[in-house]
Amino acid sequence: MRFEPWRLEVDSTGSPPIHEAECTTCNAASGAADDKAEPELWCLRHAGRTGHSGFRGITTTFFRATRLG
Image 1 (cartoon, rainbow, N blue to C red):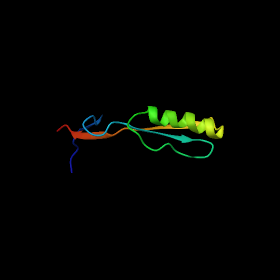
Image 2 (image 1 turned 30 degrees about the vertical axis):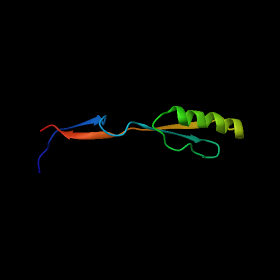
Image 3 (image 1 turned 90 degrees about the horizontal axis):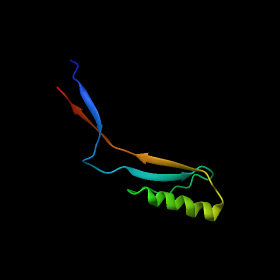
């Protein structure tokens, strides 16, 4: 076994970041979207319907490891 150097980078060749929002009061969720505007709009609609005002923004980004050696 030997050490080989690796590099970790954001993978720009695959899926773009995925955005989602969750209500911190009732744990309802917006569902995943490629565009962050969709979960943000869901938050505003959810707040209007329920009066809940706290939300958790979740962004999933993908990485790719590349061997340097």
